[in-house]
Amino acid sequence: MEQTTLSPEYRQQLALAGLTPLWEHLSNALPHGRPAGLTRANLWRYADVRPLLLQAGEQVPVEKAERRVLVLSDPGRGPASMQATGGVYAGIQLILPGETAPTHRHSPSAARVVIEGGGGFTVVNGQVCPMERGDVILTPSGQWHDHGHKGAGPVTWLDVLDLPVFTAVEAAYAEAGTPGCNVEHTMATLQSQLLRDGLAVPAALRRANPYPMLRFPWARTRAALLELARHAPEGAPVELTYVNPETGESCLPILGFTAMLLPGGRPLAPMQRSPGAVFHVIEGQGESTVDGKTFSWSARDTFTAAAFAEITHCADVHGGPACLLRIDDEPLHRKLGFFQERQFA
Ligand code: 1HN
Image 1: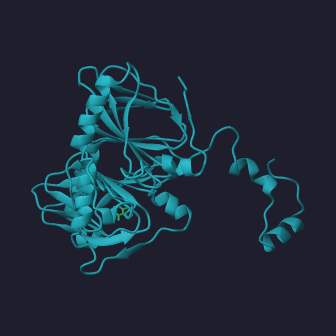
Image 2: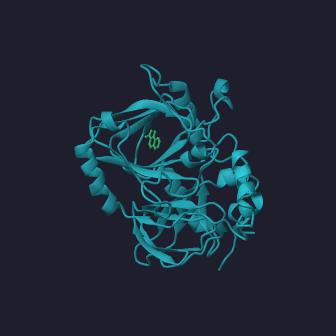
Image 3: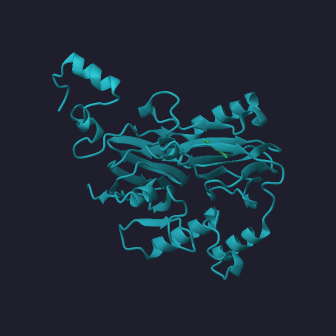
């Protein structure tokens, strides 16, 4: 029901009492049939972002900025939005040779997807994680982290955070580091190396650390995707989900990460899914149609899709397979008891 004929006196009494009539808001709060999100699918080409980011490198010292980032701001939410989709913040960060982005920690969890590596590294709770192109590196909630760069040339990566969720529940905050708070932790480093190799782990650390693996090297994921593609039935999606190797659960509590391989020239219509998504192109080129909008993409580009978007992806027939990373809030949707997927085509 829309606006009802309530007497002005009654409206005023309600307002003074801090009350509002549900019947005037119900259909807005719970739209019929599907969520009425704000997210507007968009493409950010790396070729457009990179020169703007390099200008920030000239104009903004990293000590001043704390983090030198251009935020992928959802055009559906107006200017300066700190969201790419309803649940995901995304931005592209730059660090120049010799620079250090200072140690801090915050309540939202983050992950980096390396765009230009080569000498960049991040230290997360004492684990030194080298940054190579396509690597996914986690920074779980509350863990100290800083970034450095020992190589030559710019290092850049896509940051994703569950910040919109933390903001919505009024839980977003950060703290500055103190000297020595993020010194090298060799046991944790050993644990993650052993887990990655499928070996035994230090007994004292077993299940003691909710985030036993922080770095997922692209070289390993890529090789596994190619292997999977050789065995997958024709037309079936070739997808790998990033998990906590000790539990098999999603690697972070709110954000989900899936690497997918798209064979050249064969369009794929994945299920419509309840979470909106950020897609980052790691390799190859092609195009995706998202709710009727077509994006032509190539390696290092990023695009978004709203909740329940109708999507088709197609890698170029001559470019070989393409690899995309999908980042969304599927783990949160599952925890809410709500995650849904539907076949649309
Ligand atoms: C943050 O701490 C980083 O640590 C990157 O590199 C992006 C966006 C919003 C809030 C905190 C980082 C961020 C951020």
